[in-house]
Length: 257
Image (cartoon, rainbow, N blue to C red; front, side, top):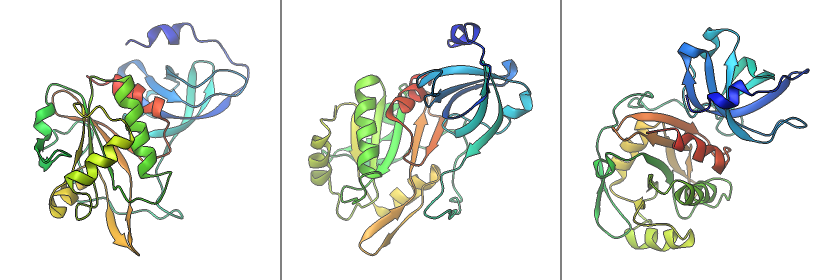
């Protein structure tokens, strides 16, 4: 495991700290989880590093992309809690019936990109692919604009990854509109494509990754999810919500092959 050196050189802590982070890798056989964590005040900055668990059973149910909270003591963690992305005031939205599990092969799909050209998921086979969902008229700065800004950062830091941004508003977000939107982020259009298509098809694709949305009072109310697909076409991670940091996404994508 490429993070082993950090683990061996970890410094002991006298006191335990409560930490939150994003799961990057799970090495169940070794009892290790790699986490891109927040800064630990007075001890360490935000970084990606491995931690050992006292009991291997604590890793059960963990998968790349999950947000977790835990108690940190030295290089060991305990009391791991999965942080689910709540929708609104603690409301939980039922998952789509076609949602994939991490490790599943992602079925191919075809949409239209910002240049009016057909775009298939299989076009990216052999390369790590990252997918998110936005709409260009989104009025919430902490939702779609943040997701797009995170992708812009990712495109610079991991240029070999292919990025697909799919609109949830195909009636408005035509290829021309998406092309103009992409220009705001100085996107590397050869590696980052903005896609539109039939609404029913987009809904089905979103469902694969647990996305739910509907029109409401002139806006589109939606959950948020970012999917990371490996070079063989399998779903390797799902990140719920928009509260993750761009550098955490970079760590997660960089760990996928």
